[in-house]
Image (cartoon, rainbow, N blue to C red; front, top):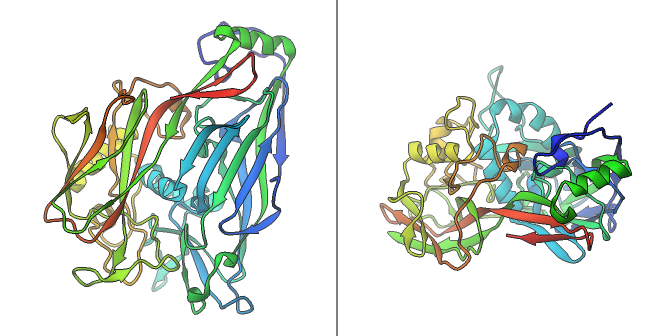
Length: 464
C-alpha cells in the first residue's frame, strides 16, 4: 500500500491510500526536427486526465553540431560559456490557453549569473560537464592538467563536432520551479517555447573561419522533452482536488522578470527606474555587461559578438555602492550596499541561503582566483574572457528564504516579499572614480508568482 506524497499537495493534508502509475513520456517539437541558431522550438505538452509531471526528474534533450567547416565558410571552434549549452536559449515561454504563465528573457545572461551564484567546482567538472558542457577543454602546463578556465568558459565543439546535452526543465519556467508535481489535466495543452539566440549568443568562436560564422554555423537537432509523469487513479485524483479550496490547485512559484538599461560613460551616480509592479518582490540580482574592450583607457574596441563571451563577462565598472529604493526610500538596507568584493560576495551568499556554509559556488579558477573575478573592472585582453562574480544581489524577503536557490524545490516554501504594485522602484548606483566605458545593466527581479489551475475551466491563470 502506498500513500500520496507531500509534493502533490500545497497544504498539509491527511494521507490516504493512493493508487498510481509512473511512466516516462518523450515528446518532440511540433515545428522542426533540425534547425539553426535564431530559431524557436515549440513543444506541446498534451492534456491527460489525472496526470502530473515531476519537473525535477524531467529534462530537455538536444544535440548541437558545429557546422563551421572548410566546406561551409571556414574552420572554427565554438566554445560555450560557463553555463554550458542551456545558455543558448535567449527566451523561454510557457503558455496555456493563450495565457502566458512564464516568460524568461535574456536567459543566457540569467543562466550564467545563476550558475556563478550556485554551482560548485565539483559539479562544474562532474555532472554539469557531462550533461551541460560546463567544463572547459583540458589545458596543460608541462604535463600537469590545469583548471584555469573553470567557471569562465565551458566545453568546446571543434569544427564538424556534435554533442548531446540535457537540462532539467525545473530550470526553464516559473511553474516548473515550484517544487510541486504539475497537473496536465487541463482543457488545453501547455505550450513550451524555446528561442535559440544567434550564433554568437552563448559562446565564442575561434579559428581561421571565425569571421565567416553565421547562424547556419550552429545546427540543432534531436530535440526531445523527456517527462517523468505519474497518473493517479480517479478516486485519489478526486481526493487531491478536494484537499484544495474550490478544487483549485495553487502553485507558489518564483517568477523571473528582466529590466535592461545602460549605464553611461563617466557618471559618478546613476539611478535606474525599474518599474516593478509585483505584489511580492522577493529579490533582485543584477550584472553589468561590458560593451567595449581593449587595453586602452578609455577603451576603444567594440565587442565582437562572434569572438567574445559578451553575455557571461561581468564587470564592476568602478561601482562603489548600490541601493534599492521603493518610493524613494531605502528598503531592507537603510544604507547602500558597499561595492567591495567581500560585501558583494556576502550578499550573494545571503541571497542563495549559503552564507553560513562552507561549500558555496565557485566563481572561477582563473589566475587571481575568485577575487580577480569580483575585481574585474574592465576586460583588457583582445577578447572577453567570461570572467564573472560581480553580481549585485539583494534578498528582499521579510523572512529570509530557506537554504537553496532559484530552481531548488526548497524554494517552494515562499515567504512575504515587498509590495511594489503602486510604487516607484529604483536601483541607485554610485561610482568612484567615475564609471568607465558605457555598460549594459541587466536586472533580474524575482517575485512571488501564484499560478492557479482552475477546476471549473481547467485552465491555468496567473496572479503576481
